[in-house]
Length: 133
Image 1 (spheres, rainbow, N blue to C red):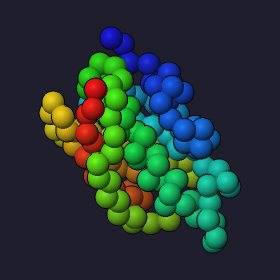
Image 2: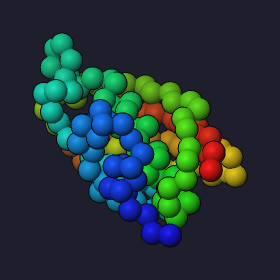
Image 3: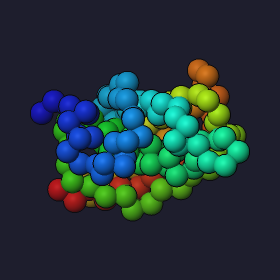
């Protein structure tokens, strides 16, 4: 099965997640890179991108990376998502880089780096997903 990330996004995510405007840049075997474009709509008081938008982007990117590892979408759900915010993002796109570190029959583990400007880390997350299909 060929991974079609745009179809996975359209078919499996809520409209508000699609409103983030995520762009899939790359999908590999257990890896994914998505771009979260800057939008004033995603900014909170003070002008920085909201943590909710960053976490939603990380969470969504894991689904794409697991789909890459599984050679297609399978039903899954977030079990745990831990995020450390390291610096604010103002007026810049965020690259969401995912690596699935362990893929089992029922669980997937992933590390997510959110970066700007060619590699400056703005947040780091780790996730556990239950594979339910």
